[in-house]
Image (tube, rainbow, N blue to C red; front, side, top):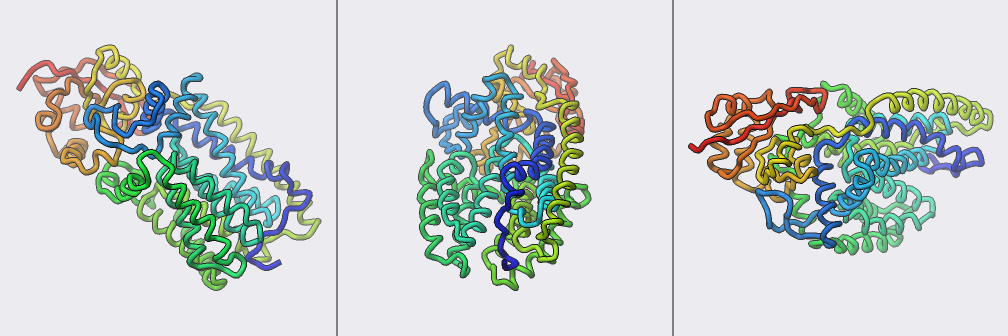
Length: 483
């Protein structure tokens, strides 16, 4: 067996053993997701899914938000919204959480299976390390499906190099699902295209042509067509994203998770990249370096880099790392079982004793606005999607392909940073607003408290996250006068 190949599973490494080795990684991801709660854009997803389920068709216009009502909009995440809306209707946040767990389990299984040649012990650690690395970006969003399908696409390429070409066709077919859920679907034809342009002896160009063409054609099977998808992708580099959304900023390498990611980055570039170059695996090398560059650009690309490093690295680990002897396998199996039991007990106990998928939103404030039948609320960015979830229309539109090019968006950022008067902003861009929902620890709150035009009517002291300065308490101000 050559170094670049993956050993075929033995009887000890059947599906039962694979599930066992993937279990710690799965529980780690499940724990990370459980601590997020229904916070952020998941509220918009559910609200949009509800609209589609109640009206029976997929809209190509914005029907949910005051600021851009009626504007053309091709939602690339509509199917995820329908799925989560259906789950939410079964009983709130917990069914949504449980409905997303299979995606996490799939990621753990794909990584663990790619590392099966390392032996059960190192296979378990390999998958667990990948799961720990992507814990910081676990949130109930459609990219969870993207992580799974991206990992499977890479695994399909590795399998095709061993003669199992059916996996390439299955990966290409997954485009029809992926394109209804998230814009990162463009990664699938990109991976296949790299292997088409830079083939290897094990995977010649003629074996990639068919799956590549199929994946490109299936991009057409979406509401609004592929051009809207491309337009949305061009907004990735917008300053509006990087200035207000932390996951679109470069990693802060003073944070613990970013330090760990940096170490993986150094190992991948220092050890794996030269090995890929020496073997002439140019498609793999470009993918690894490309995902590393994407991570340095924005922290939200962390999972794609980690999955690239984990799946490619498992295929190029030096021979002396592998456990080939029967005695070694038996010994490693016992250690793997012990490790799995210990990690399962720890993470399982933590999972059961912590709040599971809580409603992290200022429910008291939102309930007040709903009773007042507020149809135009000037809301902080962090809470705009939650307003949509509960049927209150915020001024800020969470669909970035709509508002990023609008003249009021830079001024909204100025209000958030305290460099522009909120009353002046509302006078210019939203004179019909009658309510403001904003954190009490902010320049906006100080100005509204001092204004005669606005009156504080409610304070919701529900703390939404570890940083009260960023997430709460929240307050509602009502307009009581005219300029």
